Amino acid sequence: SYELTQPPSVSVAPGKTARITCGGNDIEDKSVHWYQQKPGQAPVLVIYYDSDRPSGIPERFSGSNSGNTATLTISRVEAGDEADYYCQVSDSSSDHPLFGGGTKLTVL
Amino acid sequence: QVQLQESGPGLVKPSETLSLTCAVSGYSISSGYSWGWIRQPPGKGLEWIGNIYHSGRTYYNPSLQRRVTLSLDTSKNEFSLKLNSVTAADTALYYCARHILTGNWFDPWGQGTLVTVSS
Figure (tube, rainbow over the protein chains, first blue to last red):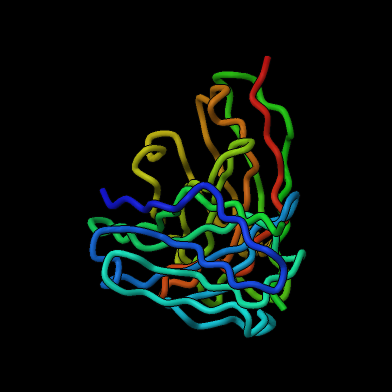
């Protein structure tokens, strides 16, 4: 089955840009979705279809997908962005939802 | 605005059946969309359990398929999860969510409910 690889952690200083990657074989051929999960809260969709933002999500959040890597980019990082971030795609063989292992974003 | 709320026992004994319900407000589940369950063991990542379409058709994670049953109760506007023969490995936060079929993503999610499997 398809596998997604995310770095366990990413650290960034406030005001800087954070980039969280999601690796998978030819992931560019898939639609990638991203969720933000703050401590003690349910996940929230922040990016769908690689780069679209749901209403209410700040423009600071953006996404891209090329080759074997999809990337969630958070510009002008704030303390409130500290959370776990998960990518999600459709499994190649079954079309079932598949989540990456998650990346903990720490704001220094 | 669609909202979802999970409910059910917080403690289940090993080998018994875990039963959870997700109440949906702001949208009639019989009108469309798909509805899903996702779980998260303590300190770990997200695992998809299964989806149920508004028609009642179901799709399950192959790793759980033998033990999982999803169902709809349109009269109460809620859907349910049953997971039988549970073990400690089934201890997790269980989330329900609306599944957007066309793109295969989940939005929004319920707040989650913790289920512990222990004697």
